[in-house]
Image (cartoon, rainbow over the protein chains, first blue to last red):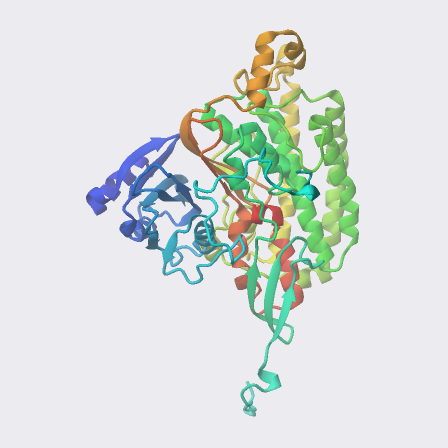
Length: 168
Length: 407
């Protein structure tokens, strides 16, 4: 039986009802979301259910939408069923004030560093992660640099007195 | 175990492990990697990895750059096979913009991508040789990597950080010199690769050093998100070129070599086999390109004036061309809204680009799925209980590239 997006959507709606929603297919990939309390349950179901079998975590990252009140941060999982060769994208939104959500490290060993990276850059607090600390940035950093509130340095700024780097 | 166990006192010297700091700039790590290892004699008990020494915040930088200015950033991910990164990025843009590329462009791209796969595997395998004590292979094959770099140079003007191609194709058509160089490479390289294999594959010392070291089961490898040759060495035939073909890979006949044990030796063999397959693909692609005659043989880019720079002579003489040139260079062309994920088979695994556009001129968010960032987490598990010198071989046989890992 070939697995298709229609079937995945039906299965998920059967299991979770309204908790999973916003199904859409953009550029040939099924995309849907769930509340952050449910993220691990949905991932577990996608992993365990034999007819779905999304057992390969391709990618995990976060996105910051500063204008979405109460839904400022999104964690995006790209999952892949290697046998049926079908990919899906699963999003979980969270408010920027409280970024707790469950870790997927128990399901996927690969999630370990990807969650650390997401924590490092966006400050998502993965509850239950064995070693949630910064990975690419220095430990002393006290902000989350990929959030939109931290713009890149203006390259035309003139207030820096830095002869060594050709600015004056 | 013998019956005469000696009970050791707490904190006695025999019970203590040694802490050894390997890296970040150790000659045996081939890149900026730090490992703080706990050693029991020469056996590795555990290791604590530190990464991020050459982190350059590419994802943040990309949020303020128009599409073409991101291509040089991708060069600096896996710098052993830059053209694959460049083309992966261009394919991502094309997917977002809905650009269809002509067949000839696809085949030209395939040639360049397979050449860079060969150069990537060549470096990795010969470095495994260096770490097991055989320097000859490394020095010998460097000459042939040079031939590949000369082809890049002929096509795009640079060698290591290539910035090759454009959205929709190439910046110029391949010259006759480029094809002559390709023919030279195709004629000379198989003999060299055979010799390289003869040096290692059945070499007693090499086999004893690599068989069984750094092994991983297929199940663990999948759970750790392994892709590329490392996953195939563990016995899973997942290859992006087959599973989600891009750039007309479906037109070519080639095999996916797989290993069995996922150890250093299998990884070496899989990479060697892949080089033979890449040669097969290049030969087929070159044949297909020669079938294009007349004006068809002049096609080297798709027809997308909004994103492809106009001809230089038009820019100097026509106002419209000049305007478009400026708009593209200054990044004043709006992108369509959308989210795309595009993956290509990089030198060391599935290289993915997750691009979110909010309709502006720069990406709203760009995330690189860097294969070696994901599989390097398995390193402590791979080397646990093995010798320190095997840990060094395992590290090089995983094909870790610090530039890609740290992004």
